[in-house]
Every structure is written in structure tokens, then in C-alpha cells.
Image (tube, rainbow, N blue to C red; front, side):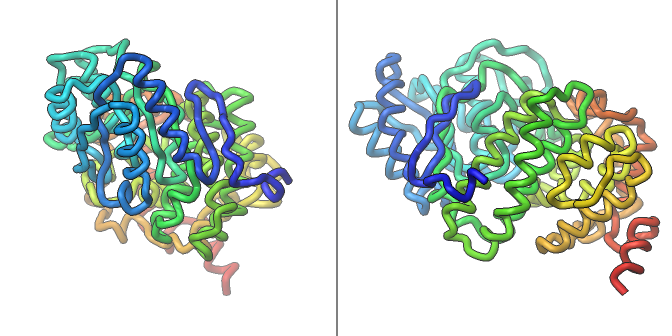
Length: 416
């Protein structure tokens, strides 16, 4: 296969809606990118990031050097947290506006990139707030240019038009999707991803898998979203164990970064539905919950519900992790069991009960699914009707790994 022969040090330009650079050493492209911004008349940029990885990876040093070389001033906002909030967006925008920032450089995973995209909209729309943006009080058609330096291999946010943020006062975690926030440029440098912890490595790649499972089975899925889904799952199933075993394996990181990129393109085409619609309330209620872990908890139950309606597509794309499926609707339990076993083998053993949630929380979670802006749209794109009873069933079937449903009883018997 191509992935065993590709030179991971040969930086490739990949043109989707965004011009993306993939390969070891791609971070050096920031010099050319800042030069382009300068040629556009941009003399000040807002840099949005969080944690310490932007410095530890060396990404920040490259940005500072490039901006200094081209005479572009930088204003740093480094307070983005996992599951970013509209309050954080507003803080970043205040800094950027004071500095006269004409572009945003986002450094990190999905949270900094989404925050940067949101800030880019507000910088181009004075007087608006993050909460107004995420409550759909206005429909933006402009944003300042965004450059995404991606430090994880999962979200796909570096190549698509989506962003999410939590409205903390309401426990709402809506999504937005606007053409104006496609990044102008993005960088996927596998060498910047080698310091991800084993758990982060797992969770971000599981995010990519969920993107394509949903994008390939939605009502608006198209041949491209399905094609990219199949390759995404093949690459993740092959290279995620390698990256966990050896975090410095650059071929594994390269292939996972590419998988996440094409997964982002897949759901840019096919959209999302159940898993993301049901996970957003989880990480809104529990801000410390890793998005990918929340998705992993829900995925088998979503497969169980959706398989009968999209059995042939799911059998095809899941074949690397659920071999032997024939594409018959009655295989739903077998497919869900295989996916759950694959997650278990990767070391992802948690279920909702382990996250501190139980039967008593299901009504509240269902309310959040129904009331959070944008989640109703996601449910409307699911291959089966997203009723409250079905949403509750997915949550209920995700409470425990060794739960009371037939899938787990069958699995337990098979393990004996």
C-alpha cells in the first residue's frame, strides 16, 4: 500500500478547500505563509493556543521567527482549554482587537483551532460576542484569515468549516459551520505530534473514526465521504497501535495525521449525526471529558442503532476493525460488538458509568440534545429518526460495558 512506501519527510501540498501541508518538517512552511499574510497587508496576527504543547513542540518558535522576519506583530492568547467556551473566545477577541489583528494563527488541536476560527469571525464582525455566534444570533459571511498549525491527529478542523464552543451558562455545546472559516493554510507536521500522551493519541484518532462513521451514513453522505471513510478507518486501525507502542514512530503519526485530514474532509461533505450530537452534551456537562473518549463511549450503541439502515456501507468501511460482516441488517449486534471489542483492545474501557453518569442523568442529557442549538440539525441527518426514545436508548446502552443488553451477554460468553 502507498502508506508503507511514502517518504514522510517529503512535505506535500494537499489542496482541499484549504491549502494543507503534510509531512515531517511542514512547520517550516510557516515562513512562506506569514509572507503571504504580509503581502495581503496584514501586519498583526492573533495567535490562539492553550496548554504548553505550542512551545514544547517548537511550533511557537517557528511562528515567532517567521513573524519577526516579515515584520508581523504577534499577540498571544494561550488560555484555551479542552472543550473551549464562548467566554474564552471573547477573551481572545478582545486581545486581538486591541492589537489590530488582521489574521489568526491557531496552534494546537481542535480546541485552539475552533477557538481561533470563532475569534476570526468576531474580529471581522465588531460588536458581536461568542455567545451570539453560537446561539445563531447572526449569520457571518466574513472572517479574518485563519492559519491552523495542527498538533493532533483527530479533529480535521484544520481543513474544514466547522467549530464548536460551549456556552457555559447553559451547558450548551453547539457547532457552527461557515465557509468563511475554512483555514487559508494549515500545517500537519507529524513531528509535532510525537509528544501526545498515549491517551491523547487514542482519543484524537477515535474522533477521526467517528467523523467518518457518521459522514458515510448520514442522509447527505456522498461517494467521496464514503471513500474517505474507508481509507480513514484502514489507516487508523493499522497505525494507531503503532503510535501507542512507539510515540516517536513518524510513519504512524504521518498516516494518522493524513487519516484525520481526510476524515475532516469526509464530514465536511457528509456531515455528522448521532455520536457527535450525543457527545456534545457529555463534554458540556463534564468539561474535563476528552471529546474522543466521549465519542468512544457512545460509538458501539450508535452502530447498533444505525447498522440496519446502512448495513452495506458500514460493513464496507468497518471491515478493518470488524472483519467478516456481509452487509446484512441482522448483523447489527455483531457489528457493534466488534467495534466495542476493537476499542477495548486499544485500551479504551470506559463507559458512561465510569464517567460518573447513570440512569438518572439520561433525561437531562436528552434535554440538552433537544435544546442545544445545532444538535437538532445533526439528528435530522441521521439515517434513522432521531427520536428522544432512540437518543435515550443510545445513552442507556452506553452506560456500562458489561451491561444488560444482548451484545455484551454474547461477548461475555464468547470470551469464556
